[in-house]
Image (cartoon, helix red, strand yellow):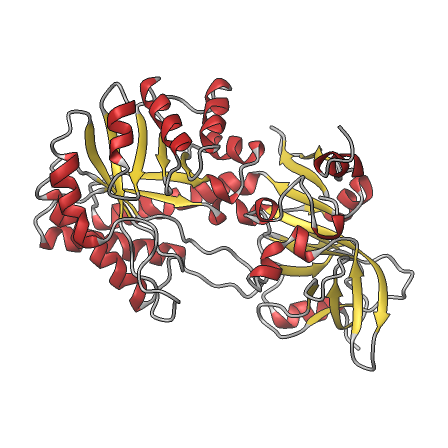
Length: 464
């Protein structure tokens, strides 16, 4: 039987930019993962911070090249979609790389305040405020405006939202309008619940924004739930949106920006292929062509990349606690954690991440199923994005085997209720931050230890 490394080399182009094998063990961005395991143990989450700034700079480069190619006269602004991961180390790394902020909750605004106190976010940074807003969210937005944050942009999500800023803001402010895009034909409803329908946009401007002595419409906002894909659906929705921008621009000269939302995919398989530069070229070319056809100046372009910013920085690492042969064909590798609680997208969305062995790459491989610790029958992982099966090294039951799920940095902690009560009271794992110092040496530090029982007892009311 061939070895595990033979399987990987025959199935994919190998090694890859972020993965390679040395001394029979996997390295992630040249980080020797066995050294991290020996130092911190498992289960653990890790975040490789330089990947965040790398992706931000990559996106800027894609748009800069497209602007130059098409002689596009607008500017590009990269916003980080905070809901993907609110951790301080993520926000700080994104801001250090020059990103701006897109928010979706009232609790985002105190984070903005903290980042400002640290000197990482200035009053000139763009803070694009999305979502259907509760009163506290609107109150916090008004306070930012009144405190001199010059580029706070509440994006109107319904026809009555503007009144809150008219009443609460004591100085002029910018607003955006979110367009309610049509969903894909196979979706359960036709039009997004978020945003304002196309037929109401011009009347909203004429009846409420244009007469205002405080509000200026600066941005039209667009988001496609399925992401930026080279499909007829995406190009049709983008074209319809830019047509609306052109129509509105003719009656609102102050409008000069479009926000095309997020949607860059991340690598969830070793066989992943996506031409980012081609897609950006096509987006810029389409926007420019429609504007020229309508004799309208091209807009500045904002994006709000979330998963693309932080997803590929993350990894989740487990030990195999034991093996269970449940019938003649089904061998289970039981991990020291839970897919439901640690990687909830696996359970909720059938999301696939890159799964690889950390050690024993020169051992033979066999087909296995992965089982989590909870009592839920859905706490398992049995197929990869490129295959309906999972293959891992074949080792003796008492031989240590470690496995890693990669590019897990977006959404998993927040969806799993980080630091709260988990299914079967499975604790949140350790979290390790990995960085590089000024000399390029790899460093690591423990951000948070594994959740302790006392924190759960307090939440459950057993201790005060």
